[in-house]
Amino acid sequence: MRLTLLIFASILALGFSPLLADAIPYAIVGQLAPDQSFTATSNGKITAYFYASSAANDDKIILWDKTSGAKTTPSLDNHSSAVGSSVSLSLKAGDSLVFILDDVTTGQYFSSVDYFGVASPANYNDDGYNHAYSTLYSGGFSGIPAGTYIGMEDLGVTSLKPLTGSDLDYNDDNIVITNVTSTPTPEPSTIILFGTGLVGAASALRRKFVRG
Image (tube, rainbow, N blue to C red; front, side, top):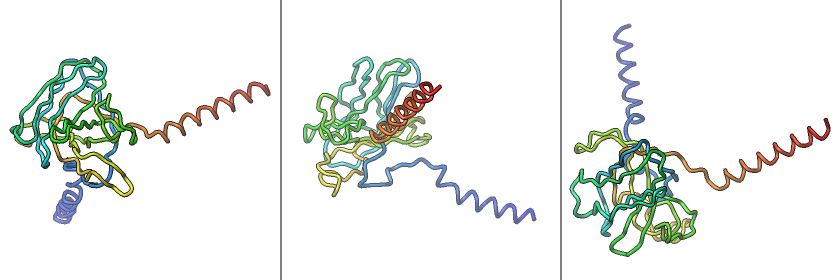
């Protein structure tokens, strides 16, 4: 019986081990990564560590605190940075953050914010799509501490159906950020449905009070 339990435990461990691993690299190549909102977890600073790159273009990273307006200069070049190289930005807890990819080769900018295909050069997004894949990183790679992994895409999207212009593999300038909290950003359709529900509930309450 004890041997049977040990075998069963081993099977469970093998079966669930992939679920416990970091979801790196991005697995659904060719599809837009889920849009995330990023905020500073605590007062102090965020630090970005260069993780890896697989890109022909020369890319750099900009950290942008949209709340205060502070930005780092373009850094963590994907062709010349050593793994573990870092750049930091001082901020306050709750500050809204955007991560920007500066494609030095093409002169374009792309960001971690999805504008649903509407270009927003003022917000460093030249095609209007999300160019950042994010997931938890538990640490252990080349001394880089645990944090949030960000994989950036450096090719602009010209069409999603069919996909043209970009490969959306999100591995062109990859970093790990500390002191950051990420939350899923609701799609416009979800917001509209939520708003419609609130309006419907308000109308129902109004009718109830009128009848009463």
